[in-house]
Image 1 (tube, rainbow, N blue to C red):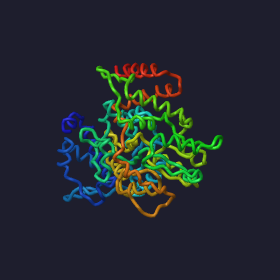
Image 2 (cartoon, rainbow, N blue to C red; image 1 turned 90 degrees about the horizontal axis):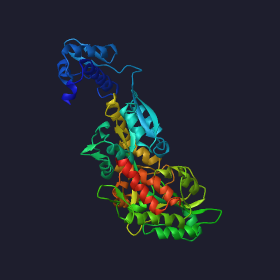
Image 3 (cartoon, rainbow, N blue to C red; image 1 turned 60 degrees about the vertical axis):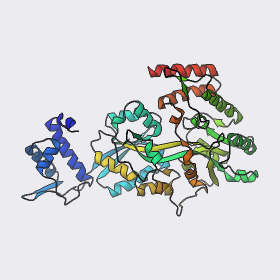
Image 4 (spheres, helix red, strand yellow; image 1 turned 180 degrees about the horizontal axis):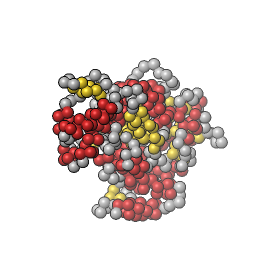
Length: 459
């Protein structure tokens, strides 16, 4: 830190002093009536002369933030009316419903009237946009999911993120996923395992027992055929081609992708190819396993009674808020060993932010008990803070009777990285699988293309 400081020009160091003090006062980190450290202390901290420090403090006096009292010291008197700092927050547009983010930001600004939050929608599908926003300083805080974070680390961009204090109140398995070399680079916000959601009335009308943790995929296929009504409703519906869905089946096999000696992925003749082939066979066994569907389509079909079962997440259950539907949830089917895929989303602070204190304060609020409890009580998403996720009390909306099943399934949570592939490789494989499962590529071509594409990408 000291070496970086000394390489800055005197003007840059003076600007840093003024900006730091201004932000600390505007965000309430330095409260009204507090006395600032001596000029000598600031001079040593920012490698400035006493005269330069004096000039910097005069700027803040002129702004009405501090007052110099002769023979006493420098007192904080601001912030004056109308003074504020702006934090630019990049968020996935889906969390408008998944976490009611705009109402959360309103709560934050009521508690912090001198901090304005400018919310900027970003895509969760491409890390490149997030990287550009961070490196250019466009965003101060950014929402990042586990896949985004893996891409960040793979690109060597973790230096763009400001390390934060690990929050002991957040589930450790969520924090661990965003930790690199002991540095907490992303603070978890919401999470979800993949789950099965179903229409209870359809099961009752067909005199069928409801899904439970013993269900295997063969059970789902059987019940799907018994629940389906030609030209009226589907027994089961989901987007198998989503990179947040198909890895589940591979994870449940307990295997990993193999590699050639030179590090290239190996697919032909492997256990993973057997699993991918089975996924294709399952697609033909359940024609309603769809591809290219729009976000929330499965949930809409369920709400309209056009599907009896869907594979979804707690995040997407929010599409059912307000619907007149008796639905419940169950663990996803398996091949003998219960296991599910975990989705994890959090917030990171831009290390180059000019309003870093305010940015950190925003993240601290969003992961506070108040904000996390708000998420639990007003949405179906699972807050990252354990006490909030497991809160029990009077519900404000319909709650599935098995809402808390996530607690029992925690030992079976897995990330796509448990398949021994990178985020880049996941994206490449996903593109090829769409062609293969659609019957537009043979197994031989699939294996060849994946190895060739990843070889080129690795160079």
